Length: 195
Image (cartoon, rainbow, N blue to C red; front, side):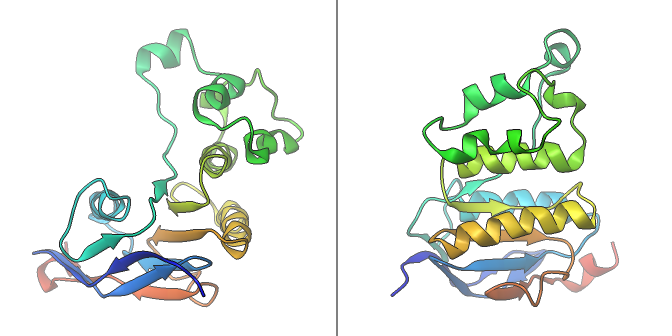
């Protein structure tokens, strides 16, 4: 029997509606927000609900979820003291977990490489592996990745989910529609469909 991680009884706002779903251990749910002007703000709103940062009467969190954050550093640090891969891992990863070293399986990535020089896919992998070194219950997106990078990230998450984790993909497209446990489409209010 799989344990419930999140119960969503339906989220209604003035802009959209997210139909009810339950995320269980061993499942990956794709929530299609549809690409467009409102994607980012909607993604951040739902991320905060599903991670338990913002309480909602219709969302019950049984297991803490963690969002795979996008790497950002201040302009000052970016220019004068850019963070290396090893500094990033030391600060954010769990060294006892094998995922904390997984990024080095990409042969050209070394401890001294500056994170801000990594392009979309390797940078996203670094964030994903770091998060997975701390938890196997995640919320993630595929923003900034091409088709190959998106497939690679998704495949890694599917493996983690298969081994007892759980995940919600907040996506703007339906490419993973037939490769997930449950597929949910956000329903936009009529006035937001054209904006």
